[in-house]
Image (cartoon, rainbow, N blue to C red):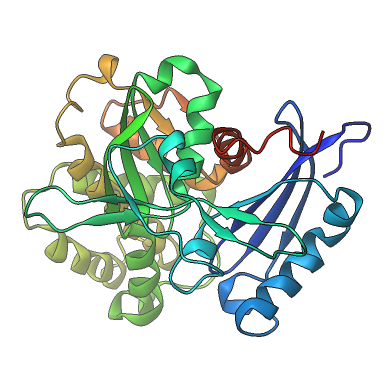
Length: 326
């Protein structure tokens, strides 16, 4: 992607475990150019500072040479304990100003400082803590789309580790992680359930029906039913009630459905008019969550796609970095 004629004002990085995305942004916060690389933390050309430097040079070196005063910001696992520089988690409630105030700094990232956003920690009383790293920037970007969402909203970020985050007055107050995507992958690839899941995809109508059947099973479930219901993925295949390719869709619906059952039981979720739902993330997965939510009578107020660039722009602005290239 490249938008000609715009003057760059920021280089922003979404740097995760398996991938790296770079955004060149103008003074209005629009993406001028975008690049992607497989050089996430697990795939650096070499360990340590040298590996991060090489990966940065490969994806954005020319942008930084052409703009020697361009500020540089990043989010994601690059700020973890295994990253370039650790940006310790900050506690909830927190907004983008809080993130900027606790940013970590790499002093020499191709001759300039790199500012890394911290993740968020939610540690309520004696309950187990929860964390996010990278999603907090997506949330900041999503809230920039519509000011009214910052007043009160629930943001759903589907993925390997799905996040449900509740926002009030622009601050993330609470959030929950569901390992839905990872559990699905483990069960499909490394369990008895995957043995009957034939390769290939079902016909769209068959796949949708199997997914909806899994969601409905979750919606009608009782506490503690999940492990019993998982075995039905096998028996539905053994008895021929679902074809092999559709078993994966049923499993997906079952797991996403149980995730939604738990999330909708949280305080404040019984009044949908007072708590709009926003889906943030990859389009196909967001559509699947929207399909599942419809079974519960809930429709998302918006499906937003990737909001990380806008969140990184807000983070840079809160850190006082916008305008540094002028």
